[in-house]
Every structure is written in structure tokens, then in C-alpha cells.
Image 1: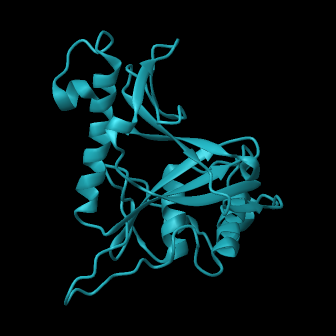
Image 2: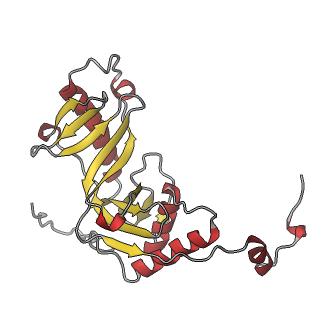
Image 3: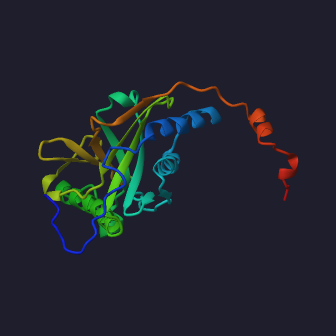
Length: 242
């Protein structure tokens, strides 16, 4: 649907179109990854690392959000940051995004979860997600999820964005799988959600857009710790034993 015209209202545009990252984003991301690989004994990049890196790349503010949907903020835009590990990031077609703990016991006061009608239980699980999205959108005009798909050794990554949206519960059907997890399917019978009753973990399954950014990185040499400390002029006087 087209946006309606309003009188005397200044229209705000996002800092860049969805999935069209700013100039030099790819090169700057590559530099960040090379730095991590050169300074860490093991090739690891966790969620908070990605939040801080992405905020630097787009010139935004980083805040550790309890909700996890607005960790990066820039004017009227907010991003939730996700990392996913796959074998070949550039070839990934779908990803599973862990998207919080949705507990009907806490949010609705439910008791016996496993014996509930799956459609009713799934609707409650989805309602918790939708309420989180609505709460964040009260403060931001644009809400996105930026995903870093990474290989085990961090030498290949893919990055893409999605609009963070509410989902229409009437379009989703729910059923228990063999592992006693609740699965949600869209009108085309595409698996979209998984909810685990033990721990209440909620997972959204998303398609990777064709215009995602993909990078391959040459492994840098690991910096020698002693040489690095000498280079910055480390002295024992920097330390004080309490």
C-alpha cells in the first residue's frame, strides 16, 4: 500500500534503502573482520561484536537493548543484529534467526503448555513477538534486522537486512513436530517459525535475499602479543595491584 499524503508533515527517509549498504561498507567490514582474526587466537565473532561493528560501519549509536530489536540506533531507525553460522555463507538460501524467549507462562499466565491446542498456543507465542515489535515501533519509524551469516573460520561472510515486522496470526498454522517443538507454517506451507517449550526459544526462518552482500577474506597472520604490547609502549607502571 502506498503511503498517504499528509499536510505539514516532514517525511523522514532512512539513511539508506533496505539492503543497499552505504559506500565503502564492504571494505570497512572486511577491515573489521581482518582485525578480529589478527588479534584473536580463535576465529569468533559473537552477537555483541556484530552489534558494535555494524554501529561503527553506519555511524550509529550502539546500546545493549533488553528486547534485542533496537541495539543499533540512528535517528528514527533502529536495527536488531543477528549472527548465524553456516558452512558456506554465500550459498545460504535460508537462515534460522533465534529471536528471543516467548513464554506464554510468563506473558499469559498459562499452566499446562504441552496439552494446549497448537493453534492457540502458537497464536500466543506470535503475539509476544508482535507486542515487542509494536513497542519498539512507537519510538522508531523504521525497524530492521541486519544478519551476519558467517563461516566457522570467519573467512567468508554474507550480510543482509530485513524489515522487522509483525506477523498476521491468521495466516499461520501451527503443529507439534516429532521433537515436541511447535512449528508455524505460512499459507504456502513454508516453515516460518519454531518454538521450543523447554526454554521458550522462538526462531524465525527467513529467506536470504538475492542482493545480499558476500565477502571472502584472506586469513591474516596472528599478531604477536608481546610485540603488540611493545608497539603501544606498555610499561609495568600501568598496573597497580590492589
